[in-house]
Amino acid sequence: MDRSMFIEKLSKLKKVLSVTGKEYGSIVLKSDKLLFIRGHKSTYERIPVSELFALYNHGPHINNAIAKTYISGRVQSPAVSIVNAIRNGGTSVNSVLKKIKPSEKKVSDTSSKLTKDGTVVKSQDNFDFSQLEKLDFRATGNLDEEVLSGTGFYFIRLKLSSSLPIRYRKRFDEQGHRIIYIGKAEGQTLADRLDQELLHTSAGTFFRSIGAVLEKTPIPGHLRSSKRKYNYEFSESDTSWIINWLSNNIDVAVVAHSSDFNIENTIIAYHAPILNHTGNPRKCAELILDRARCRRIASGLE
Image 1 (cartoon, helix red, strand yellow):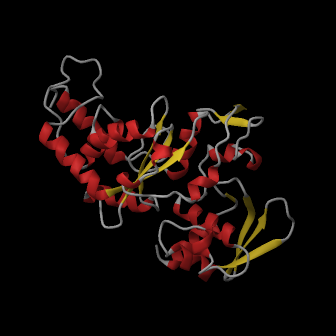
Image 2 (cartoon, helix red, strand yellow):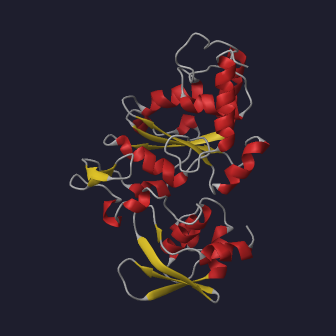
Image 3 (cartoon, helix red, strand yellow):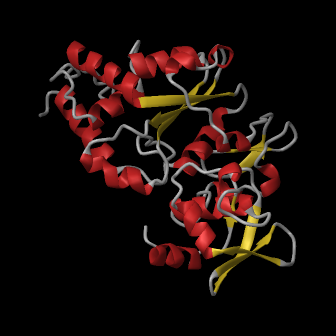
């Protein structure tokens, strides 16, 4: 994105929220500075547009520590939220997140949870959304064994040296980060869930999706008499190829969680990863078409 388009997008911002629920509102672009009001304060703070643009050009993964090298003054956190808002199409959170009050972003045993329709009800959850700003991506063999032994969420990221097929690259670049899938391990350990998704120990949504993206063809007609047309499988050789591709091209971050898993949709909606379909406000059209084609082949219709 060039500077003129960046400025145009800045001019359309009115309010952004950080992942942890802090609000930066009354945003206005004045000359070469962006003005905003923090939380419930009444005075404007300023960030030079040139500094915001430099932070944007750092890359898709930014945090307050990185922002300190670009942003002067004590406005690193709002700068990160504003730049992330530009990457996410106008807001640092999606329409679902905007329905939650800032005080409800870190849910306590007396606060609330998010339901699928965006309403808020009482919950015993205690998920700290600030964890999403400091995900620790590693090769699967180096993940924390203690975290893997419990339930939680996992984040699959494409390595910097890796890429998706060309027809997916525009959508991938538009999302502004390299996370390609977010999933949950509820009722099973993260270790078992990742084995399912990355080693195909049993049927997994992500494995089917990445196989379709990588242009692998399911076994023709093997679901012809099955009622579960979504659970298509690839040949043994293609399955081995996909497993090998994943081992060389992705890193994973895991976050322990054992309470209310309805927040999965909130997390997915915030990042809108290219290979997530359910709960994603920016579903990938190419993925929808490729998965549908795989189902037709597996059903013997093509």
